[in-house]
Image (cartoon, rainbow, N blue to C red; front, side, top):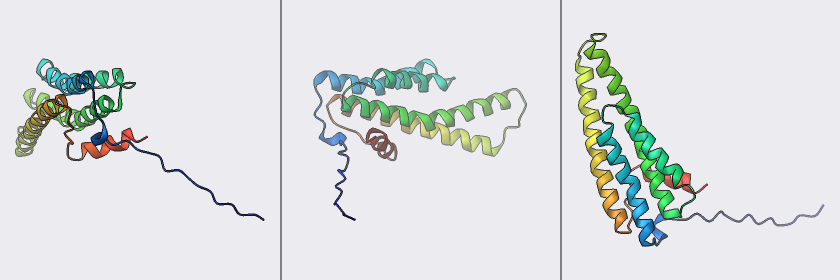
Length: 153
């Protein structure tokens, strides 16, 4: 029996910090963050609109350069928890307004928490849009790690 050495090449993963975008790429990557802001302003009471707008932008950018794709994925990944939290709050508010549920301290605490998270998301989205438009990368806490994992596939 003969043994041979097997060499397994490690998959080369791109890093977003190594990307040097062109002007049109900066604009498209920045637009994915702006798209989510515009969707929030248009469809504020319905949380699905924001997620759909960001998802549509991602699907339109799937074949784009790594820089644009990475930022569109980060924008989409950041919208998923926001969608879930806003959706729960929306339906809980409907239940409270139509007297199916009582106004409780748990509801008020959740309302405050979700609104603080929405403010945080809004600020981070604006920062990301500005930094990306300048050609940089604004890595969101936790979301950028998930984005790296998705983009390395």
